[in-house]
Image 1 (cartoon, one colour):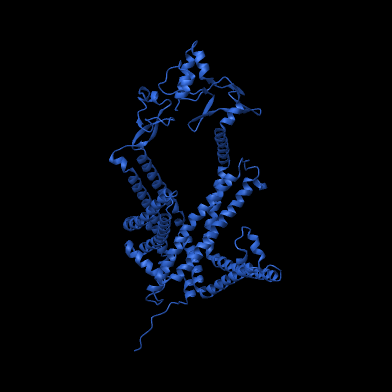
Image 2 (spheres, one colour; image 1 turned 180 degrees about the horizontal axis):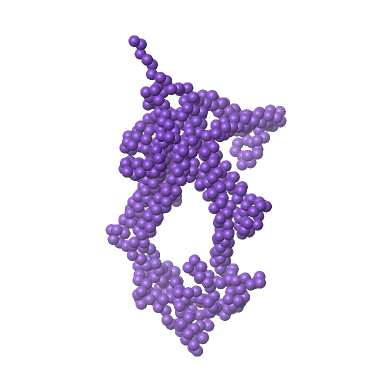
Length: 605
């Protein structure tokens, strides 16, 4: 029930009736907590409680989250409400505030959650500048990590590869040692199939066959890694060279690292538009009220009603305790029947706008770094303001291509959302075939979405390089990647692994610094750091923020590497290293490929 203000005193309906005979102001105060329109203070308590016209009693309360909660206050270790520790209920029985607290245990939990929330807000207010410093450190470390990859990419990758080889070799030796020991142990030669399934996994470790399986598995893994390293070493070196080239390109086009801020702003606008439109559609109907009654024999239950005239009808007489309550927003018109379809259309537009915003960013970054690769003299031939120039070209010439690619992806995502909705509706169904078919469809469309994302990303790069339409660019990108499929696989895995490792290192290092900072274990600035109620909250904020900052920087770097890779593949196919058709690639890539600039051969006279 909506009230203008919360009660500020203890009172019962019985006491109000007794005091009403001498002073009518008691009823004037009490009736503001009754149903609107109820004005019969002489009505018996039993009838009032049956019809739920008024509460049996009120207690001093205070507003919280637009609700009135008992005003519990602890004074000198004693729980009180309005400075009282005891009161009388509607039956004139003495009650303690502790009983009220136990009855309102859920409300107390909300009150305690409010206190925890207030303490968290206090922590943020007292250490917000230290959080900003931590995030700034993460930004600087991310930038330094990217710039140093030209020197450390090869070392990091080869170090990790050989560390994995040595670790697997140690695992093989340990498995052989366990196998040799258990082979001489009586009873350890039982096979795994003989003992069957056991919940205690330690049982399997007492069998020699288990360690033999482990040893064979690790041996095959070790052989696979060594063979791939032997046959793919040249591709790995190309991937390392492209990572170094990407780091060098970032150093010349630093402004590209801050383009994700524009993407974030545009995404915020898209989300706001979708939320406002969805709320408008959800509340665009008329308010529908229905009769709610606890009596199962009430023939008016769930029928529509009007709250203004409900008390003047005979429904309350035939169904005692019935109420006219709000049910939902809706109606019976054609518009109201198709609101769900309109919500799906709104969702499609939202997905389209989000994908278009991401596509615009990818095309902009790709165009900036493509201008770096195709510059004959670096950095002298790089055009001024490459990011702004690429952004302008993308908006002026490639909006239709980006919108078309985004629409294809948005349609697939909408189908996935509909499948998830159907899966949620069919959770209680016992049709195994329908569930199986739905699961297969979800898996297929997930794979389709991943493929379209990959193709769109490379199509946008080709659009940024050549300026052709989406379909032509997607086809050329697909065939180019298929002609270099091994290089694509190696570069993709190497890039993903190094960037994931970089994110963890940055978030972990900043997290360690923040831990020693917030726990006041750095003597130099110990007095400057405030004492916090929950230091883990700002610590997690710094770690999560550092990871997101690193992810933002590394997404630009990954796009840079992918762009340079497609340019590199195009360079190999279009040019042959002669003076007439010289390579645009870096000298490091030429050395790896064994390419050298050649002069055109003179014809014999």
